[in-house]
Length: 69
Image (cartoon, rainbow, N blue to C red; front, top):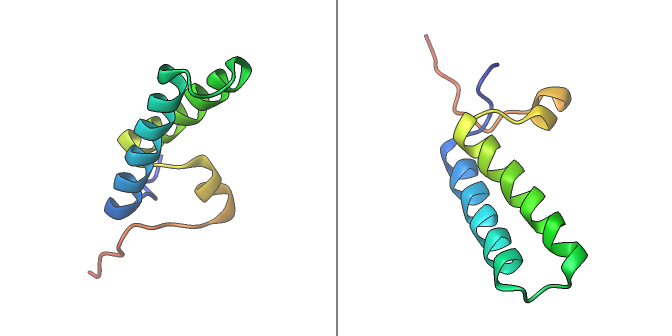
């Protein structure tokens, strides 16, 4: 897959994932929503680590800097 997640976007996604995991694990949110937070955290972490976002691909977006040849 083509990389479409830039460096700043990766950092933001990792922070969102950590916050979601924290609130899910800490139990500050009602029980059914814990699973939603785990899912959001997992998706954000995976897209950050892989450097590609399926939604960006569908919409034709990219936050990566263009390399000029």
